[in-house]
Length: 388
Image 1 (cartoon, one colour):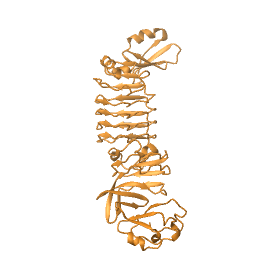
Image 2 (cartoon, one colour):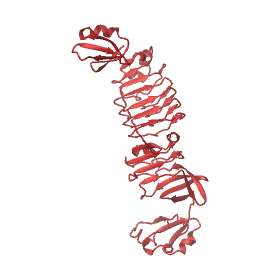
Image 3 (cartoon, helix red, strand yellow):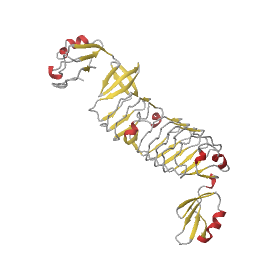
Image 4 (cartoon, one colour):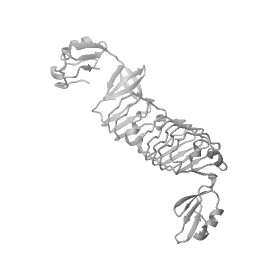
């Protein structure tokens, strides 16, 4: 800052705590402030005498020398030094509506890498319309983006780097306030986690409303707690073999999700992982030896079809959590055969998953052909029906 004009803070009668980060004070008009007698002016360490001899500033009765050199501002963004080479963003000026956080920032002869967004750093900033986060960020503190509305266009420089960010809580992710989501300035309507990523952190996509699909590669072993909680537009999820842990509330509240396949490599599913997913009615588990899960992992036990590997239905029916499903289909290999009504009033035509015609029958002979069908799930006159 190089200038403070007349009356800038005049008639601010309760302004009693003023901190100046200006190391070389310039003259200001006497009208800039009005609380010279009551306020405490805190200035950078070693500059008290300069302020006491500079016109305007010298009107303050209480000047305190000793503001830590660990904090400085550049281009409207305030930083706190966290190590000899790194800084954290602590706030952005209210005149900034488009916030571009740099990878590096220069101050007093030192180039710092920007590695963190501090707790509460953007709290209540519903006025921000664009936010760009560099790949150097490794942590975001608690409540960094609480009460920020839902109109921010959020650009993440690197999706791979984003999967290494530690988030303090569910209000740390800017994606919960995202009107639109970009990766390296390309707008995204889904997430394809890069190969090589081994975990998706807690809260990383919490309440991101613009995600329609998710593809998780085999390198990912852990999906963290609340990673995709309340992503209400998410309707398609592909989880690859290799996944081991699905965290608590990982997909809770994903109301657009209608089906999910859980890979055979999964060994742990924590509480509420798929809770509050009212449309999740088609669940396939490829786990050969079912392990106990909490009763609140799912919420559609009465309405969903649970498809399990051939010969494991009895095991699922006696395993805690899984045994709450009312419809468990043994022999998941039978999935895909479809029984559809034809144009005629009394003819039913059977199709395979590949679209080839399997056969047809009249309505009155349906029971006969139904008995001879292999196990699986079919559609009969538009309604799902299970052949066990």
